[in-house]
Image (cartoon, rainbow, N blue to C red):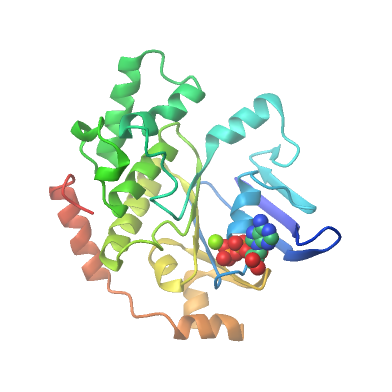
Length: 274
Ligand code: ADP
Ligand code: MG
């Protein structure tokens, strides 16, 4: 087990003396190389789980264990290793990249922070390699985020997360703000990277269509509680919970051929795609 979450509870303060509990007894786990989908409507607590996993906020109850490291308590070398090996891609490709940094600086930042490339030349080389890997043109390294489309910005965010060699990528609705055609490209990219790098991915989404293609196991969240969990086929073919059934009824039929076509065209002209 690479990451496990056991019996997590989380509340937010809503006033001086009041708080609301938004996560109730959340347990889930991910193995190396697995893709887990975390699905639920807006407000169900998906981002709160993601933030707990990344140690951005602290749960009141429960344990999060990453490869033997107690995430909530970790310090020193354990904490540094956790910060390097667990990375996040956020929903908003416009707000999550500092507009004053060039693409090269954005992607290379983690190398500096974690002291993973000794010289500027080594850094640029590694950045160029990452840009290639996510379907961006390395010649664009000195340009700024504003000159890129939403889809390209998510590629930048993915390269930025992957440059330091994480083992888990937590993606919080990474395609929700993108056009549907571009969504398929970014999901296919994540799937390629997952296989290539043997990455574990926790993929947060508010609709099942998006996770169906990528994730072999799915956790369905409703009002801060897990209502169903299982492998993709079981969830789609025989959903047990009424809420899961409602979510499935809302899913438009996915079209894998369209997705494949997008993927092929991306390979042939990486610089011009999304
Ligand atoms: P999701 O990502 O599934 O949309 P969130 O985890 O963002 O859900 O939110 C879960 C619930 O917690 C929502 O009711 C939301 O309004 C509330 N919430 C989220 N962040 C905060 C916060 N910082 N303070 C108070 N309430 C919050
Ligand atoms: Mg959210």
